[in-house]
Structure formats: structure tokens, C-alpha cells
Length: 618
Image (cartoon, rainbow, N blue to C red):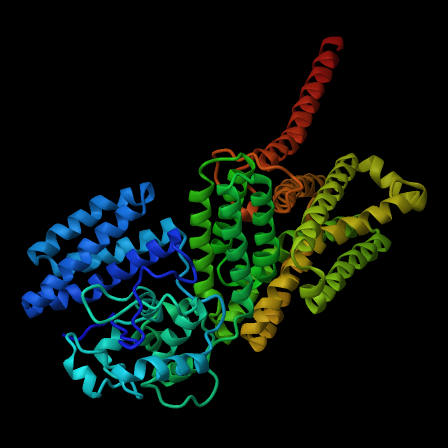
């Protein structure tokens, strides 16, 4: 029978698995060993049942027995998997349900990876040159120099060494499966484990065997993450990228700049879990903060541009894990392993590249989403000032929002250097709070001018009235602060998208500018025709609502750099509206929302009282 999982490096270098490994007798090795056994069962058990070979079925029974032993070796953390393993063992012992066993093994592998926080890919691009050296020194004896296993010693083995040119064998093999085989060997076969090889060497030879049947690479491979390459079979890569790109994907390791940040985060999280296990809670909390600021934050813009839901999931996992460390919770390990799995999920998509058309639509959506609130505010201010025939103040508003765009352009040019790590979150947080203050000022300013007859008299006094020099500065900062946060954030998003397609980003920007300009013109024209009192009321409501949204986003950003504490509560997350399930952001938003409502109720009651007094006097 053709064996998907076997990777017989060499009988000449056979070393017992019990010998000291470079990773030590770590808990992680036991988890990986169990995963490797289940991967064999997943791939080989259906074929063993179909063969009706007593030898093959006996081998599968030894695998599932070993899997049960491995789970028991894991102690309390493995107990939750024993019932599922016993259920699989019962079917394997009877030689029944091949499809169900294969499916259940695959599901159990995913659950083990999540529960154990296992890394299923190398931390750096494998050195294929080194992999070839190891293969020729250790593997060619059994597998042949070309990987076809057409050597004399191979004919004496049962099962025979894998032929790495065989399409059926390679269809079920991934570099991660090969890595586990190299690490632990296969019980009951001639395949030994090779713990004396370093982790990087094992990954190198595991990736190298996939190049043996590939022609020379001509051209540049499409972008793909190490996480994806390590966990994809050849047919999976062909389906995703085309047969013409398979050779380059296997022969040229990717540039992992974006993925490296997530790997940095992963290292810090693993360090935090070790510190927490040793009772050093403060150091664990600081390691988690470093993981986010130095690992995730630098690569967040392209990740958010491609998959904003995944970024929200990542942020939540970080905050939950950090909260567990701050509260010295025994759940830190569980939260941390969930965080590791989400980081690996982000890694799988980190190397993906969107086409020009996709990038254009994503860019357009981002511009409209980020620019909507700011453009509405600016348009409302312009419409109001034109209605009041105050052209000097119109120019001030234009100078304000244009200045914010200039800052955004600077962020686009130098964002990666100036706005990395905590700097970006601090800018978003403090700029958001400043915008909240200016928007509330604008709301009060508009509300104070709801009496039109009085206000028009003030306008006649020009610079002597309420619209003096201070008001000009206020209008400037309202326009500037309303656009600044979105301008900088959009610039950083576009930076990430431009890596996928500069052309698509450019066309998306052009379309977005046109859409936003049309929106501003529409609101400006409509606002000019609205009754002044209606315009004032609508603008006041809009400014307060925007202030509430920005307050939530600003406090959330400051929580991510630990300047504001975490106080989670059961509630929903609506990122677009700045609503997060945390008392430290939601509470101030509720207060800010309630204040104008209370003032309105008091004002109406006061008006009703005065009207009643006037009626009684009449």
C-alpha cells in the first residue's frame, strides 16, 4: 500500500525517539506526536480497510493504540480527548467506518492544534539548500538521490520507502505531516524519528522533498504564507494558484515580511504563557502588550484591509488574554492558546495577494467608510456657513480639512516609520479624544445659535459678534480633527493595499474621491435649501452622534496600549459605531449620549412651565 505519511530519512541514522531532542521532553512534543499519529490514520486507514490486508489493519490498530497512550501521557490536558480517541479505536479495531474515522481524526487534529497552541509551520523560510544536503546524506540511501525509491535496499522493506514522485502519495502529504514524521518516526515501521536534527533542519528537509518532482522554477511565485505552504498539499496549491505556479511555490520560499510580524507576536505570546505558568503575571502582561504592539500593530493595516472581521477577532483574543494575565487568572493558558490559533489563522492569509480589481473595490469601500462621517460633518458646516453668508469662515473650514489630508499624505509616505506600534494607537486615541472635544464644542456652538433673529444680528456685527477670531480657530479645528483620524488611518490602510496592487489602489482612490466629493456637494446643496433651524438641529444631532462614536474608538485604542484599563461586560461589538463590550468605553458613551437628552428634557419642561405660567397670568 502506498503510504502518504512515511518519510524514511535513513536507516543508517536511526536514533531512538527517547533520546534527548533539541526541544527537550516538552509538552509541545507530545501534542505534535499525537497530531502526527492521527494524521497517519486520517490518510491511511481508508486505504487499509479497502486493502483488507491483516498486516495493514494491524498497523492501523497499533497507531490508534499509540495515540491513546500519547493522550494519557499529556495528563489532565489530554483527558478531554480520551473519549473521542476510544470511540475511534473501537471502530479501527473492528476495521469499520473508514470515512468516519478519517473525518473524526481530521477534526480531532484541529481541536488538538487549538488546545495545544501548536505551531504548524516554520518560524523562518526553510533553507532548501540545507534540506538538500540532509536529504543526500541521510535519505538517498533508501529513497534514492532523485526521490523515486528505486534502490536495492528499498526492495527489502515493508512498507517500502515513499516515492516522492508518486502523485497519489504527494496528494495527501503536506510539509507539516512530513515534519512530524521526521520528528517522531512511525511505530512498527523502519521509519525512525530524528530528534538530533534541529527544528530548522527538520523543516528544511520536509520542504525539500516537495521539490524533487518539480521542474525548475521560471518566474516569481505568487505570494503565499509559510503557514499556508506548510499545511497545503500540492493539489491544494494547484487549486489556489494554478498548476503553472506549483514549481515556484515549492522551490522558492516566500518573502515573509508581513508574516514575520505575526511570528514575532506568536513568540511573545508563547513567552507570556510560560511567564504566567511560573507566576510572573506582570511580565506575562507586558509580553502580551509587546506581542500586540511590536508584532500585530505594524501589519494590522493590510490585514484589516483584507479581512476586518479577522482583525477584530485578533484584537478581542489579545484583550481577553491580557485581561487574564492582569487578573492572575488560571484561564490564561486557555485564552493564550486561543490567541495563538487566531494568530496562525491570520498567518494563513497574510501572504495572500488580492487582484487589481479586488484592491480597487476594497480601496473604494475603505475611502467611503472612513470618509463618510468626516465628509458629512464638513459638508454640514459648509452648508450652514453658506446659508449664513459667511464666506470667510467657509475658507477656514476648507483649510482645516485640507490640512488633515496633508497629514494623511505624510502618514502614507512615512507611516511605517512614524506610526508603528504604540505610536499609531496613541495617535488614534488622543486624536479621537480631541475630535470629541471639538465636536461637542461645535454642537454647543450650533445650539446656542438656534435663535435665528438673534444670530443674524450677530452676523451683522461681523468680527465683533460670536463668530470672532476664536470661532474661526474653532471651525478650523473642528474640520481638522474630524478628518485627521480617518485621514491617517486610511493612509495606512492604503499603504498595505498598495503592496498587493498599486494600480488597483490608485483607481480605487480616484473612485473614492469622486464618491466623497459627490456626497459633500449633495449635502452642501441640500443643506443650503433647508430651513436654518432644521439645519442647526440636524447638525447638532450629527455632531453629538459622531462624538459618541469617536469616544468609543478612542478609548478602545488607548486600551490596546494599556493606558485605559480593561473592564469587559457582556455586550455586542459594533466596530463601525465604536461600540465595544467594555465598561471603560461603553460607560462614557452612555453618559455622553444621556447628557444632551437630559438637557433637552429639562429645556422642554422649562418651556412648558413658562407657557403654563403665561397662560395662568393671562
